Amino acid sequence: MIDYISGSLLPVLIVVILIISQSIKMVNEYERVVIFRLGRLSGVKGPGIFFIIPIIDKAIKIDLRVVAIDVPKQAVITRDNVTVAVDAVVYYKVVEPGAAITQVENYMFATSTLSQTTLRDVLGQMELDELLSERESINKEIQELLDAYTDPWGIKVTGVTIRDVALPDTMKRAIAKQAEAEREKRARIILAEGEFQAAERMKDAANSYEGLPAAIKLRELQTLAEIAREKNLIVVTQTQTPEIGNIAALSQAISGKKEG
Image 1 (cartoon, rainbow, N blue to C red):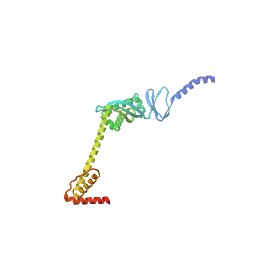
Image 2 (cartoon, rainbow, N blue to C red):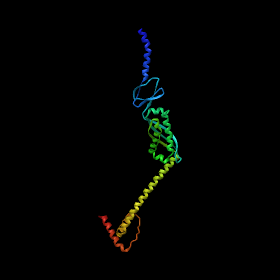
Image 3 (cartoon, rainbow, N blue to C red):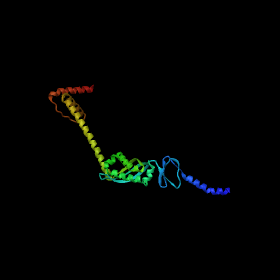
Image 4 (tube, rainbow, N blue to C red):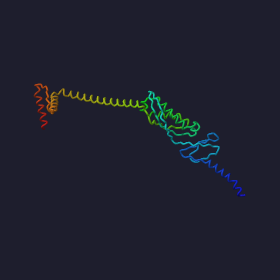
């Protein structure tokens, strides 16, 4: 009799164990489970251990960690009619698991597709110079647009980074020529500034010599002395008779200075 009862209870016991094993669920700290009971949204469970009703409840696991989407290269025509290939990385995470399941069929695919179209739309409204020089502001603008679009889905876009902008070879050569012309312009400006400062100094020196004839003669003699160092060179200068005494005195002063 006991064996008969034990044999009849064994299948029931197995069924109970199976039901209990299917009822106990556990998820990690970074995961949540959306529960549907008879087709209706029942709630969100986790993290840790929780129970569901087998067959009646349906559980869908959601990862709350930040996900990086590698947006493939998109051919974009800028506002100044330049075709470039741009790729980017979009970072997002699920903040409302219930909305991510009930408001969109496949939130991962939808976010990826939306990122591609938004990238083309935003960059198509800009000129090439803006695209190359204002990456940070473009990233922020795309992030704000994506965040607004995905907010009803329970998705938070945390960042967008334009990774690469591929230019045609002809455009690369044009940009290189432009950069070279810009460097040459700066070099010419610096040279002109130097010539202007030198002219100002020469003008100041000329004004100083104007009131001191003896000083300008001394300068003339120094110049002649420098020229005379060259061999086989004859220097012819014009000298007025009344100033011979001054020149001799200046020459004697220079000679005395060298001997001393």
